[in-house]
Image 1 (cartoon, rainbow, N blue to C red):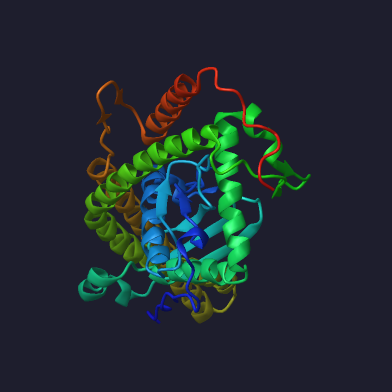
Image 2 (tube, rainbow, N blue to C red; image 1 turned 30 degrees about the vertical axis):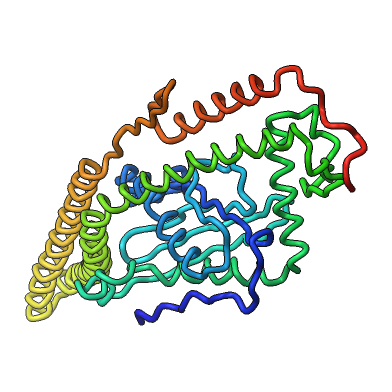
Length: 372
């Protein structure tokens, strides 16, 4: 079946202070747990780890139930909800993702495995132009996130946003904001008190946060460009991988049947050849010859299997060369960020910290008697 569940929309309308921002972290490619066949294509898996989060982002965003939905380089983000994923399996025929989602307060929203199989119709040109072959997985994740969101009251959603803001503020100024949150042994955060609305330290943190978001928004253009470049060769690779996977399974089954039949025929032939009856011995010799042919045929098919494996490896190398990410340079009046996305984000965070410290200077921490 190629049916894909529709992404659901919220039954209630939330105001801007209650809409949660979602960060979808670049997936863990799961290289440590690859089986023998999958281990031949580590670069493809690494590329998928960047490709799949953006497809999930589009599905989540299409529900119109959230604030900003962004792909982010790591989970050290100022996001109300963080979604992390691990690729457990991906071979063109089947995909299996492990998804873990939690909000800024530390509450776990999702901790599930999602599996889907593609059919031959998934790779028909008309279908491929409209949907990802595994779109059903991304839509189910989007719907599960929405279901979790709707279990919270609007007031609880607003609290999650406040916790997120205070955690971000504390990461830049621990002394000024340490007493505003508490965390239990399970890592669940609760608000102890709020800073005053006109707290100058909080105002500076909010400006820094906007600059942080501006950079992450720029990254969305990078991920969109990456997916656009990857889509063509990757879909062709998956199509070929699907066909190779199915062919491999059929060849392995047929090869095994022939080998078993060949061995059985030889055993029967040896027993008949040792018989005292001349016609039985003749039949035994025929069985031996036939058994030998079946085994040779089975081994020949095993060789054909290796040819398919080599074809997949060549496809993988071709894909790797076509989707190699380009170095990003983001420049303003004073700096240029270089290196990988993760490197650039770490450079930006350090720069923002320096800007914050320069702006705050000797500003005293917020008074302890803020709004509660």
